[in-house]
Structures are given as C-alpha cells and as structure tokens.
Amino acid sequence: MSGIFSSSLGKKLIMSISGLFLMLFLVVHLTTNLLLLVGDGGLYNKAAHALATIPLLRIVEYLLAFGFLFHIVYATIITLKNRRTRPVGYSKTTSNQVTTWSSRNMYILGFAIFAFLVMHLINFFLKLRFGEAPYVEGTKMHDSYSLVSNFFIQYWWYNLLYIVSAILLGLHLSHGFWSAFQTIGLNNNKWIARLEVVSYIYAVIIAVGFTMIPLYFWFFH
Image (cartoon, helix red, strand yellow):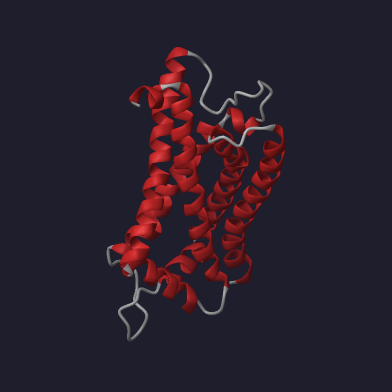
C-alpha cells in the first residue's frame, strides 16, 4: 500500500484528494466572506461567531483548513523532489504535453497564494481567535465586520494584493479543478471536456467573488 502512494500516480492522487479539500474550503470561506456585502455586517458577525463557537462547525472548518495546508506542504515536498531529478513539476498532465501557463506554473501560483494566506491569517484570523478584535457592543461576539471592513478601507495596498491573489487563485483552480477529478478516474474524453468547462466556471466564480470584496469597500466606503 505504501508503494502505491510513493509512486507518481499515488502522489498525484494525494494531491487531488487534498485539492478537493481546498475547493470545499474556498466555497465555505467565500460564502461566509460575501456576507460582508450584505446589510450592516450583522450577518457576517453571526456567521463568523458561529464558525468560532459551534463545535461541529469548528471541526469542519479545521478539517478543511488541514486539507488545504496539507495540499500546500505536500506540493512543496514533491515539487522539490521532482526538481532534483527532472525539470518537470507535478502539474504536467499525462494525457498531453501541450499544457497551459497555469498548469506549468501550479507551484509558483500556489506559493504566491500561500504567502498571501499567511498575511491574511495574521491580519484577521489570529486577531479574531485570540482576542484582539473589537466586540459588538453589549455582547460577547467579536465585531468581525468592523475589523475586516476597516482594514480594507484603510489599506489600499492590501486591496491590490487581495485582488491579485484572487486572480492567481483563479488561475490555479482553472487547472487544478479538472486535473483533480481526472486523477481520481474521470479521465475519458467525454468527462474531461465537461470538467474543463466546469473548472473554468468554478475558477471564475471564486476569483470574481473574492475580488468583489475589496472593490466594494474601496469604492463604496
């Protein structure tokens, strides 16, 4: 069994499964973040509070986040190993050698996204989870909306980084989405054609969805 996962196919399988965690995490995260655009921030505060306090939601959040981080770490390990033996990364597909720019640069895109994620965690997640964020008056609920919105309003450079990261994420997903399903077995011509279309739609929704958030606070506040 260990031999399977140490093989080239096994490594791609692990990357695909952990990549699916990334996709689920992004859907949950984007859905929550889009509540920033609704009303006066009350819904966003409640959603963020639920994620932080309801045990089941916290477990799900941590599982998805773990899959996300594992995906990044494992990609780093196998990319470094591949570069020692040959100048071809894991992003090459087995079906053809004519690949897109994003498929040839999956690790570079992933590393750029990870660098932004670290900064994002420092500015928001750590403050919310370790008590530096303000509280909603008269409650024990963090005013997550004020923390996030004020940061977007005050720091224009962070908005630019956020938008660039969203675009890079979309490029990463445009290949990673259908490639993950191809690796787990949906690799005939009929399914690949469909998955490529769904992949681009998914990538655009994620990229545009995250881009809308800084633009909203940049131009309407």
